[in-house]
Length: 211
Image (cartoon, rainbow, N blue to C red; front, side):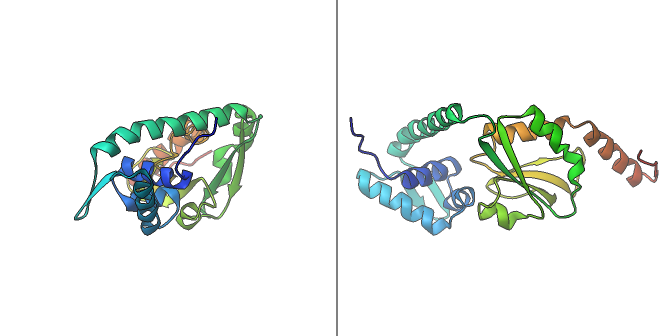
């Protein structure tokens, strides 16, 4: 049986834009321009013969057709991703991690991570920043800053407030197994809370030595 399907890129553009209700945030997730997302969605609407969005001033709203289409498309993408993950051999779920230049990689305990996550092939690019994440050169990034980036999920590497190290991933892939595994690993590192306590004590005027 031959399936007549719309172009995959157009479906991805619609699904991302529908989740965010924003071409701009969808563009951040897909590493393209907002204009490219808009063109893909317009081409999809033309192919389907229905309007999927109402384009109001500074606002994007799903039509009834768009609301009915979105859960089916999202579920299809999830099923494709799950089926693909099941086919991959050990270590074939490649995860490209970018890390800012001043971050001490010893904190990540990479050898232990790889040993306990044999299904993930982890590669590290350092130095790396938001530019590499937006361009798709890395899948997830540890960046230094306030941790506010629209269209991206930002999780602190250690407890604290203000400036810090953040794990940043596109909203659309932030919960995939590889990134979730890395996020859980960072949260479970024994020295993360110790570093946070050390910094709090320094701010309070105490300067104990780390051993």
